[in-house]
Length: 349
Ligand code: GTQ
Image (cartoon, rainbow, N blue to C red; front, top):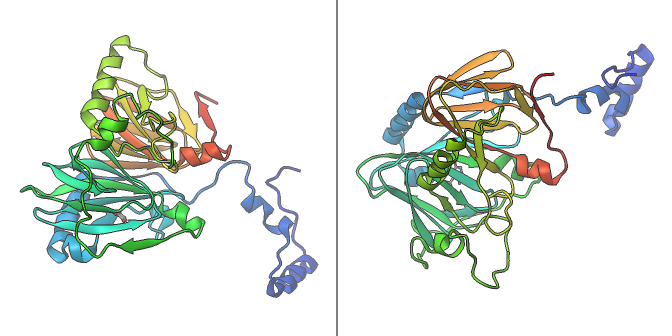
């Protein structure tokens, strides 16, 4: 019998199911096909948010509430297939945050880990664990689990960035803790650039012992990541599925930069058409430079700079570009790899 076929229902069987339900029991064979599926099945659907719309709505929100009163002025990008869940995929969260000139988002901490991908900034900052970092366009910034963090904008322009958090994962494990500091800003105990100097120069302090699964570098500046891709493109060694795709690493162990969220930056040349690809990690793509087209199963999704596209688990994708294009992406791949669940399929059939 294929795992797809549920046994036929009979009146006697249904009576039995109804009888055991009040006793908090359920017959496995009546539900098995729905919970142990031959392939991933998800309510998560492919979707795109246009940056211009999200940005305009955030400026409207800024008329309604300050960053301080909101604690975080964020519009959640909620997957339409997961309505009411505050999820962009089954396991991850996505939002876009806006901090207006002169505003602060007050210091707090929580057991959820966060990434920021900076969409528009004239030089705002975030402070994490006693150190400030400036946030510039394209920077990938990490807030580790339980680290104090506050954000501020001392420029004359609004700042926008994308927030990727593992909120649904923490929810799944019922492991959420959160607290406010009671101050707008945490005390700054280390100079800006300290963690980059200690951990981001292809060296480590002698005797350094890894004490957390998160990278000790918390800002991966776009200028450096982009330059690496530009240098490498000279060899024209394009991966058929991804173009040139690099993952952000924890320099201490070479693993993913965050324990729950995997992040990548990829460059695809003008006129690129990828081979089909699918994987079990539903992925959020963020347009950084150029324009492209994502074919996701039967859908055609055109994206431009700062647009956000979500691809569900095990949905075949094909990338196409009419110009040089750069995408940032994140998914729950590190978790799936640790659990031995990650699968991918390259090419046709
Ligand atoms: O900036 O700390 O989008 O705590 C959601 C929860 C951002 C943040 C979000 C948060 C934050």
